[in-house]
Length: 176
Image (cartoon, rainbow, N blue to C red; front, side, top):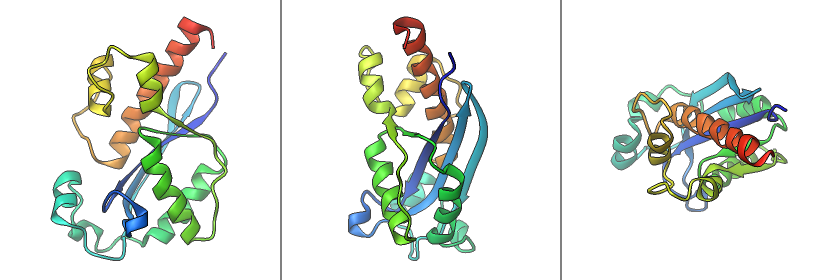
């Protein structure tokens, strides 16, 4: 039995919480069907204000890179159309869900997609892992990476491969 289709997504943001005015600056996502990545979505977006030096240094996304990008509202409308009602997955889904829901609210849309968290699942499936950060789990499971972290599409792809490994384990070990 094949696993259902899911979209694994990730945001790079200006800070930790939309409740404090933080906004996304990049969204990346991969569509997984039949245990394979079959499509990708990635866009930079302008938050409407200058990005701090800390966020620039963490993500590598500079204010110059964002200068000519569309506003969050435009990108999020395209992203909402792309995801449709497909189930969503993220690493530390609570963080990304807050930003997704806040941005969808801004454009008068609502998310009904069910969501799953690879952090929570990895704690149950890989209790022997040194920790449950994405980079650690990628190393622990031998998932290929080019070493790029804190860019939305790269993180979504690695999380996608992690999701595939976890669902394969659930199917093979537990017959779920």
